[in-house]
Image: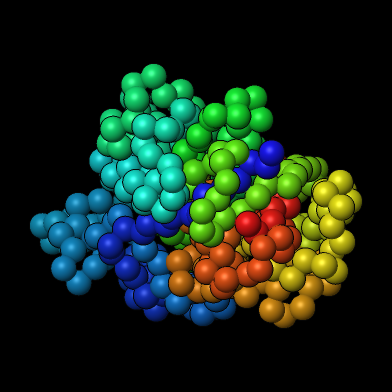
Length: 365
């Protein structure tokens, strides 16, 4: 009996920043010299992003400030890690609960009382009791529900969460696993002129996504798990990293990442496709994590894909930016919306610190 994803739910914060508005904020905050202004314009205009959502309201027309801007005079300020994490502790649980609620509402034939396991995922904040308990209380799940949290794994973390859910379902045919990813990347915006920090500030955003995993038959849109795989591009170990600093979490995202990912994409995916009995040429739909436009371009070239293969990934990047672990679920949701036929293979990939390449072969139900 197969293990299935019963649809996917997505949620974003209500505050939306057009990319041009985000550029103006950064120019006002750290710009003013010719080199930085030129870098900012080039990075933001070539990002492939039209806008992003955020829990930070400081820069909205009706925003009151308080985190990145002094509410008294509007002056820019650099918040401490503690101040940023306090916002995470306030805002993240709401998104975890709402995404989980929508996922259960979309999983026909499954009730909150059926959920046996909750797996929460996030790398942009820490709080205990954690979001896993917030989901149990917020959705009225049984207090005996088993809870697990995957933290600080980065953009590929949805895959370990789904592998965990699959393992629970393989071990217990009656298991129903709720997986919820929430990332508030915008809390860690940095007032830095370092090119890596500028790139990170131009692409990362906030968002949540959730799915229900079980061995029950899917009623409606869904995905069947065929196989997962993971590998590490050891030559990129120092090119993508996520560390905790005194003024937020600091991202290392070097300009070499797209090249490294593109170089290793085929060797990473080929063993997985072979094990699943799927030919690369037979895969018309790909859910590649849109870490940035250059990453999508390099993956497309490395795998020899047609221009439409990554259309869903490019659409998610354009509309939402990079929401870390939640993003690949957004791409899968877009692919399901296009009403593919049953049994069609979909390959999903994401990348994270290490440099880790995680992937999965799924098929439509």
